[in-house]
Amino acid sequence: MTSTRRAAITAGVLFLVGTAAGVLSIVGAVDGPNYLRETSANGTQVVVGALFQLVTAGAYAGVAVALHPVLRRYGPTAATGFLGFRISAGILNMVGALILLLLLDLSSRFVGAGAPVASYFETLGSLLRSARDGMNHVAMILALIAGDAMYYWVLYRARLVPRWLSGWGFVGLSFAMSASLLVMCRLIEVVTPTYLTLTAVLGLQQLALAVWLVVKGFDESAMVPAGAQ
Image (cartoon, rainbow, N blue to C red; front, side, top):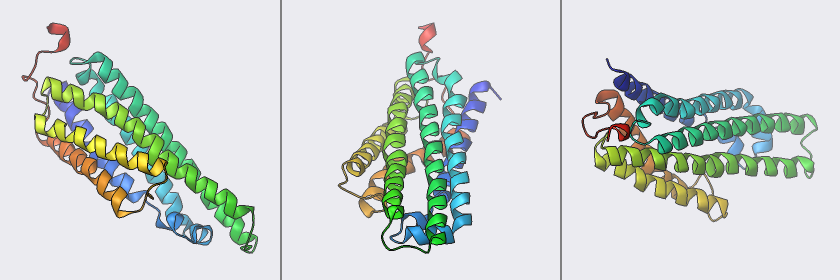
């Protein structure tokens, strides 16, 4: 097995692991209207969600690390940009996990104080939830989009995968960016059909690409590396 084939399989598996961990990191109690009570009551779920979010962060960075030796042959600058933005997205995801744990601590203190009707708990909780949404669904997503645009450009230009697959990636990135900008402008909420529909386009493409990388890998004969031209 060549190093390129190993890199493709590793990246594909990490894509799948990151997707699964991302789904398992969802904590419904934090997003509900009674989150100050429910978060503490579902403490184990919150901690597990934070741990899976850390796994997602590692997978985000791991994909770029695994693919960097391959991508730099066809686009050194784009490969480095992809790696940098993916690592940044992983760090932002870790911060999001930390905010989730802070919400759990705040909820525990709120319940311990007798769940006062009006208090600084509500103000602080609202700020933490806004920070978490901004971190997970705006800052992190925009970092991923910036890096993945470079990634898909290399794939498209070098024909390392079928062009319909990398082209689908560009379409998905545009939809995901629209979703993040709408959330940032407070025109839509995160857990809404509009947001989920917009982000599903990229999610399905990444699943398809992950399976392709595991099963078929890169087409190394499609283009001569940039350094050999």
